[in-house]
Image (cartoon, rainbow, N blue to C red; front, side):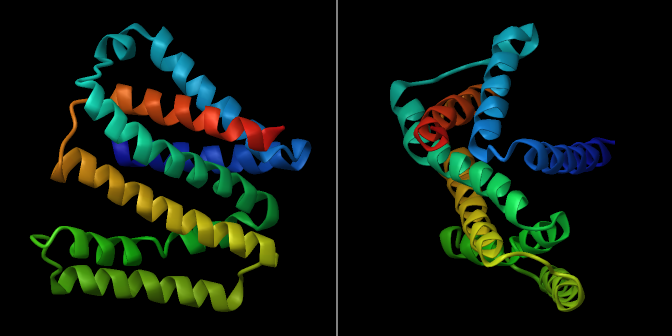
Length: 194
């Protein structure tokens, strides 16, 4: 199913990124290349190109000023964290993301109800993270710093996206959002790659 495909793609991408980092040590450049590849793919693949829609200039600006900087920060700190930490440590820290994300979403969207099952699932996830971290968490202090920044950027980026997609919607297609995120994000990262 789609979930299994997403899990396989995510795991594969992390492993490939880690291997590429071992050989190149150019984390920001790798992220820029990946972002530009995404933009080119959206433009070249006919079905994706046809689905691009940018509503009003105001909607495009609302998305552009908020999401791409966080997206670029999330991707670049992810790559930097992989360069300074084990994949296991990175995955463990990222598994903490649902806790602050849920609390933040409940603060932003008062209609969101957190039930007992959700709290138990969060507690179980947190217990797994703590158990793993106590026995097998290897990273340099710089790796932990990048993982912490990555976690914050990922949670904030998802909250801003949720606001602009569901709570105060904009009229930009998903392909348009991907183009803006990757195109603007790549431009923002260029000065850091030099």
